[in-house]
Image 1: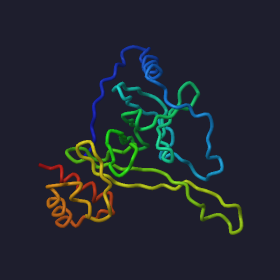
Image 2: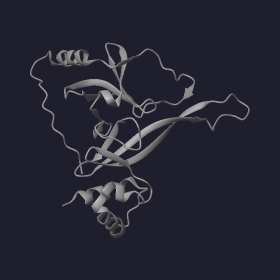
Image 3: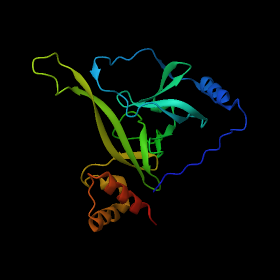
Image 4: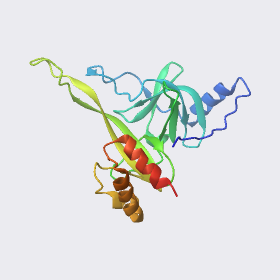
Length: 219
């Protein structure tokens, strides 16, 4: 299922970009980033490199055409403004989206509460409906296993991913088995188990998980 969201944006006047940046400044530009604290760590903390995208502020205001990147280690959205770098936490931003190299829409939201995690996270929306399929991409700092024996210990950024099912404003981490299906699907647990059995789905496959959520959303 493709996610389609329509945004009404005024493009009739040449000053619209300046107007949007004015909204950004008026509502708060986020936390300024002075320099990277990860110069001694191999790799990048970013989930994606900087792309031209759109951010959605807490008040619903939309700011387009801004360079953004998700910092998976800090779990903040970083953006460039006037030659400077700023960051928004999930508590201070409703979401953001951009198009990847294949021109596919990549959309993130911070609307869901995750009961098992104390803070909000930016979650990628893969499927929408009664049940939302969400991907939580983040990075951890791990030991560099490629470092030569006896050399100085180095750290490297390592990508991690988890899938969540969102319903009624809450998102539950999907385990590799069906042990928490009752918590996620409630009265529809039996339906979810039947779909998995009939379609021979694996909870270790993103394609299969998407199919599960698509079928759960069918009336």
